[in-house]
Length: 240
Image (cartoon, rainbow, N blue to C red; front, top):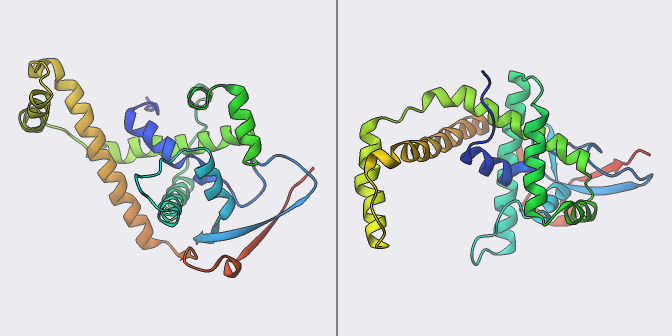
């Protein structure tokens, strides 16, 4: 049975990199008979990452700004995440996947509506950023493919033993609860929660290793430090 894309780490991955799959064409943009000049911030194996993509990720608040993080540092971090996600998408394209279940896409879309204070508020925000809901559905479906791939290809590497659970309970959970003066449960009551948490952490490490390997094999051109007027220009023709 194919694993679903509903676990905690997967929701986080989806939140932080959702819009990284915006193609360099007009998919997901609202249709208007006009031309849009855009700037290329990076190219990953001949696949450009546009300035508008970064603006959309920032505008939808999918990645939180760190405390005291300057604008350039925030944009740099967003671009690094977009580059990583392009690499993952390319790998998924090579691996090949069937369609993502529609109910998984709608579940994530509903969660976004709730975070953005309802359908009307989300629609207004998407319009402001040059997106529509159908385009967003495509992006969610593509990201869910990555999450399924991660579970199927990397998940089997992650095994959490009883000794690791016990160590976390003794050295992390119990001291933290005592520090907060909270009741310490018996390990049997929290064993599976601890196992899930440790698996999530380990799987995120595997994702990092996998992505680093993809970076080593990829041809990445990064223009982030260039002056804006020196960035490669991309002209998109919007189709009626």
